[in-house]
Length: 268
Image 1 (cartoon, rainbow, N blue to C red):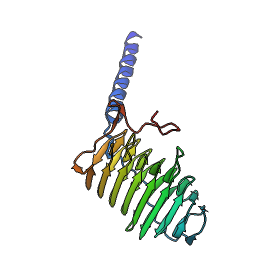
Image 2 (cartoon, rainbow, N blue to C red):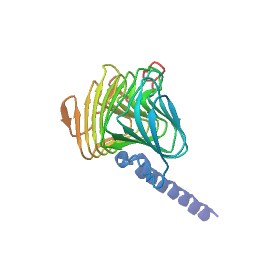
Image 3 (spheres, rainbow, N blue to C red):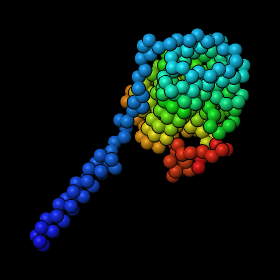
């Protein structure tokens, strides 16, 4: 009986050792730099299409493609859908004084396609708001331009953010672009000018991955991320100087950036 008990004990210890080694190499010691946004690619084949000329705030609930034209002096495009939605912005001008100009309350994936020259601004100072705010995955693409002005954050995704193409210029008093998960840039051109103070040009609570495009950030803190920051391609310019590796702002010199903020916009 003693021999049998000893064999069982040795077997248990062996399993624990194997489990510990596996955990260390595959989880604790895992290289997270290759984790991408991994957003489902919506094809929109046979999707319903809608043409909208803005005259007042609107709420979109049906899956499909929305061609948006016109201007809103003070209003919001709200998305609340269980499906995929694509907004094609055609020389659109939207200003909002009470919340985001584009507000994604719920969706599977939202695509914003840029066509022509578009302008979005917000003067709100509420804690959760941005000129473009998304509670779910957000993708920006297209061949057009987008100018964003915000006295809070420029673009904020509570999920993942992916930029594929387009030309975006952002002036913001808080973060330029913020994602709670992975923030990935594969193409296009982004120019971000930040206000002074506790602000970040590109901010992610997860990884920042740059595979292409040109990112030009001017401000006290160009990048702030809690995971890893990786440049696989493209060009990154921080305050006029091209860099080969992403800097990472450290709050007070020893606290990681990307931390939550309170109602006054201060890091918690």
